[in-house]
Image (tube, rainbow, N blue to C red; front, top):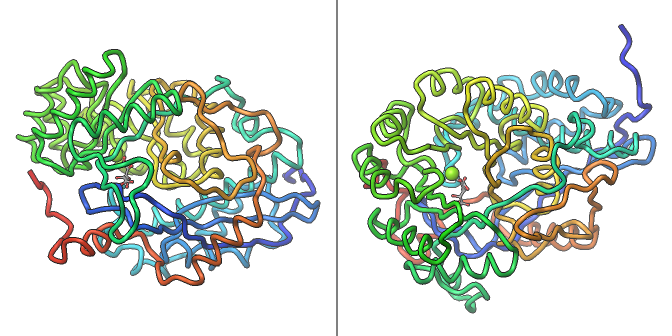
Length: 431
Ligand code: GKR
Ligand code: MG
């Protein structure tokens, strides 16, 4: 059978590593660095279209993407499946050692292995292929995914405990948030500025009782908002049971309270608290056991590591079958990622929770018209492809910053050591 051709074959691929600024956001591992890497992909077609992709910038990802890029010449952008076979062939076993190294400091997304690395590389190119393909056909990416089922995608305010400034820098406009009052103040800024109607607090930073108090303060300040707390598996099962009981009726869901299927299943079984995850279930191989044991009630999809936009729809279909909810995980990102997240979220019928996004924390972007949040949502555009255009000047500036710097990986532990030289990533459970 011959595959219908769009005439849009890849003529050139550009891979540009960049560094973007990041505020001092605290998490279990430590603190975000002042600069963090991302990779921007451009897939040029012979027909003159350009598809964009954005993903992690850490060396492991950048190297793998750079290894694949030169082999894409002549591949049709309408055939992402061919891309998958090619990536398998190119990355093969070669990078196994690098890919199976211990979960690095930026971890917080569950275990990593070669399959996951390949899923991420595929996802980055798939987004660029779909963007290009949509532009060739004059249709939005969501149309290539089956069509949008909503015109706006809701995002949640993603709160972090944070310092007022990185060491040696002037305080940023957000200010510090190190106690319940600071957290509530940060939430007010998010809600006033962007209209978010649901709130997530990144936990695992302070003792559980302090984080319970912060959630209670949020509940008091925002009586009707769905609230979530995510300690990135910092707690033992016993601590998780305690927190879940304390916050029953207060939280929409508790995210990754403890590590592993067994512990998560126990916490849900004994408290009834809905549990969400981006750590316990991070790939298709982890779904059967977790679902069978009712360890998770909401899976946080993330096209960046679940294997792309179409894989996100597969995941959503699986969740629908098993009566498990779907929401969306995020990592520090810019507008190309937000466009991709929004396009796929628009096409997921069973998305009943606001998606996570780090976007408001980033002041820069590489697209000409950065997204705006209205009422906490991003409009789902109908422009061809992802509906975003590369700001070449901004891209060049952020790449220059990368070239002039030695930062090559996200490392929250190293950033914390600047302030606390003895700091190590805590052993789990921390509490
Ligand atoms: O940005 O510090 C962070 C988050 O902790 C991130 O690394 C996590 O992957 O947002 C994530 C989460 O929901 O666990
Ligand atoms: Mg999480």
